[in-house]
Length: 403
Image (tube, rainbow, N blue to C red; front, side, top):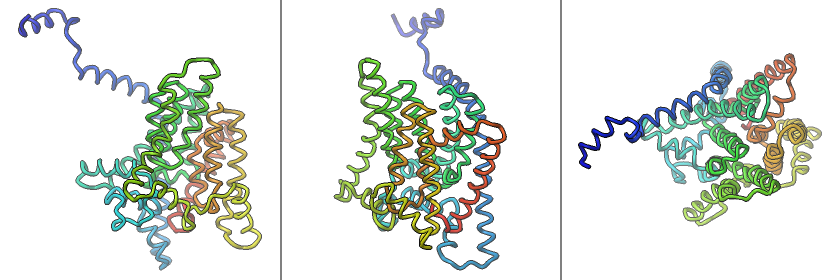
C-alpha cells in the first residue's frame, strides 16, 4: 500500500489511525492533575503560611541587627545570607562552583550532590542563576511534600481531618523552617514520602528510584533501606514470589549512597571522605551510643556548660516517646524508619540539628497528627508549633541556634 493510501485509510477509519503521542500525553497530564489537585489544595495554605513566617523572622532579625547595632560578624553574616544561611550557603556554593576546594570550603564534600547539581542544571536555563534555581527547586519540593503527606495519610486509611492536620504540622513543625531555606530537606523528604507511597502500594520500581534519589540528596536517605526491607519481608511472609523490583527497592537507597562514595573515591582518593568530614569534631563529632550523647548534653544543665545544647534533651525524650507510639499506631515500616533515623540522630556527641534530623523521621510528625485529634488540642498544638517554628527561625538567623 502506498503512503497516500495509508493516509486515506487512516482518515476513513479513525480507529485504524495510530494514536499520536501528544493526545496521550495530554490525557495523562489531565489524569495526573485530577488526582493531585485535591492534595495540592490542602498543601498550599500551610506552604504559604510557613514562608510568611520565615520571611517575617528574617525581617525581625534585620531590624534587630540594624537598630541594636549588632557587630558580631557571625550574626551579621547569617542575617545577610537570608534564605542561604547556615548549610544553605554550602548548597548554593556547590551549585555555582561544584566541589572545587578553591571555590567552596573543603568540608563541602559532606553535602550530597543531587540538589546542587539539579540547581546547577536548572540555573543554566535561568541565565546562570543557580541560586534562584536552588530556591525554586526547594520551594516547589516543599509544596509537593505537603501534597504527598496528605495523600499518604489518606492512603493509610486515616480520615481527612488527620490528613489535613499532618500536612499543616509537616509545614509548621518547629524545625520545618529549613524547608523554606536553601536546604536539601524539602526534596529529600518529598522523595522519602513518595517512596513510602510506592512501597505500600507495591510499586517496587518506583520505590527503588525514589529511594535512590533520596540517598543522593541527604545522608539519612540511605535509611530508606529499612522500611523497604520491612515491606519486602511482609511479602515474603505472605509466601509470594519476590520479583526483581522488590530487590531493587531494597537496594535503591544503598546504591544511591554508594554512587556518591564511589565518586568521592575517584575524585579525592578517599571512599569515606564525606563520612569522615561529617563525623569530624567540628561538625557532628564522633559516633557514640544515644545514652552517652543525651547524658553529655544533659550534664550541661547541671554544670552550666552547653546550656543551649542541653535544650536538645527534652526533644530527645519527646521524640523517643513518639517513636514508641508510632510503632503502635502505624505500620511497622513507619516505626522502623523513624527509629532508624532517630538512632542515627542521637548517636553523635554533638546533638546540634537534632530537631532537623527528627523532621527527616517524618512518621513522627504523622504520629503527632494522629494523637491530637480533639479539635481544641489540634488548634493548640498547631499554634504552639507555629510559634516555636517562628522562634527557631529567628534564633537561627541570629546565629543563636544551629538548624
